[in-house]
Length: 177
Length: 426
Image (cartoon, rainbow over all chains, first blue to last red; front, side):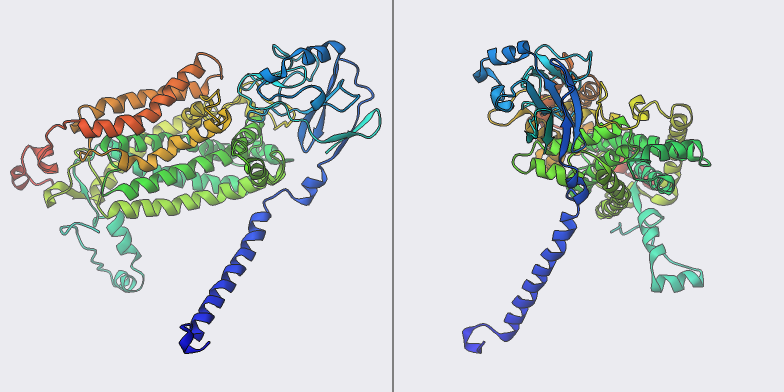
């Protein structure tokens, strides 16, 4: 660095030192921020296998996936017909029952049991619980009603009950996650 | 800073002289809360609540450190460790109830302190920084109180944590990852409980730090007073010690009676029975509400039930809830009136009363179930709340004709300044 460039040796050292300190600073911040993310043991618990052989038509069970409830419902033909009779374009979060289930398994409605409003557990999966005016699930916290395809029909929730990633490992076992 | 007539710290004992030359801490205390701090002579009882807020912080830190000695931040034992503290630890019940009710007492005191500021224009120049730091303290208090309420790991703790962290999921794009980062998982669990405990222990000391800045900023112009007229002469002030130390001591007495009445005779009155049921991630209580001190803001959150243009109702509610407090940061510049005290502002005075009533309506709706007519009432009340700060205040401060101000603090107390010479305050 010659004096005539207008860049002095001291300027170079200054920029290099501050840059190195900046990079080091970022290197310190990354682990400090990242340590708060879900740890390996939490992530390891992020798939669940459920045996659904005992779930009768018209029945629903609660499974646990990522420490949150999952509703697995064996829809009756009437519930399927009701869900298909709805004009999809009139829905807040337009989706058909086909889009929310697996091909050839439209009677198996698998959704998170977590209201999309503020995260309460809706009622309707247990025996004798109220299922709301659309016959699906009803969230008691702020009155969101879901239909037989667990789509939001009334109340403050913005979205349908979330369908988690899952596959049918066999006819009677689903792997969620 | 202090006024030219303020007494100067003069150590007499040789040790105090030795100390003063090496670490002038006694001098600092003397000038901050001793005979060296000159305070307007006409402060009314509303000026006791700043001191009481400091007392509440001390109560919370002392009882909180004791609670931490017996508490275990693990989802498996957290609930039981609180119950064991109450039942088995010597005086554990007292510490627990003093801490839980201390939080409520703190918020009662701080709300009166804040509304004192609204009425007497304490946020106006040259005290804007005092006000801004105060709003920061209030936000820190809310975060601390929320995390503290999660620690017993009862049903309300769990679902409170779920709902409040769920607010962050309303943020577009980064919401879901942000919520998972805050919780360290997909739902509140051990990771969340541990970090809430860590932060619940840390934040009160951060509050303490900001309180020191708050007092530092206050002591540059000196305390305001009910007339809003600045101090002009020696007859306008009295030294903090002994005058206001004695008056604050009296306030401690009244506060302690009310506080002890709650701690000893109604320790669970402000709590929720559901929080005596251990947390159950599979079942939500039928009626979840936050602690009473969050109700006005919770009502604003729930007031948004329909999308506004392209903004989803959920995000709108979250923005409005945070906005309801963030708007306080702009208060010194929204209220353009040069008159501080509402006593001399005939129009603003009534809007202040309406704002208080509006807050009470929001408070009631926030604690009620989310159904009509409460939803509609909270929508109207929330709308008025924002209108007060963003529309009414700027307009009123521009068109209002204030009443004549007294010439000085002394005149407001004694009729005219000359009397001060004939009848000195001491």
